[in-house]
Image (tube, rainbow, N blue to C red):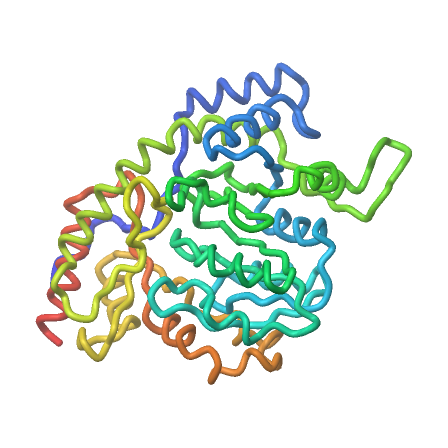
Length: 377
């Protein structure tokens, strides 16, 4: 077996600015004496993200979960929301917080996104929206979902935690649906350490979102709705302004790493790359593969364990379905018989180490482990 790496190879590393640039930015903030409550850093970051994403309506938040939670609140949804079980728990948890019932829809076996061809059968008189997730940077079937929403007068919300900068036919992904949430967590391509944003079609939502993320306050003496504290602070925004400068170069580096993985894994039976968008479209958030044990000869879990033994820390992501958690598994739509593609995916997907500082020679060594596992299977 290939020798272990001397140092751990993790699934990701945060994209970070130089200490000099961080100190300069923090110096500006301290000099201003304005560290939160929509200061200059937040205003400037909002402006720059609008330019980068080519979108007009954006609201910044202190994390993606609260962004999505309050976005749903702003849309005033009721009843049931059709969504995917193959996602991070927060996607479904925000439905609970809004008093909404998730209805789980199986996923497409190729993209691993919500299967647009199965949505219509799940619509009832209680359905108010469709909540899709652009999994691993692969866009949902946005045109088909829009057709369904138009037919039944439903709202469309996308969890876009994985798709910062992704385009569909040259159009920014945030233009599709009624609302898209972006995560700026440290594990994401673009980050503010913790943070998030909403992009939205109806510009009238801007004022409501501003109220919702600031306690519902219109002044120090008047509260007009029940809000939360979900504001991005100046330190987060300042970090984001410096990190945004690095994103394009990081995407170029990740493109090269992706191509190396693909070249090295090509021809191995049972290995399929999930994240397969072209360079001008992809967020390059993850490099994810699917492992078919019947063709490769070993399971995803076996490979995962061997990689760990060699100091390579890939991630079983997503390793569990939201429909399998105790909180949700009693829901009728959580029946595994109706979610067969999703159950297959959680057994087979593996998120590989993927970040700009990852050496191409290390990618080759990682892929050599796969080749040796296959040759010995």
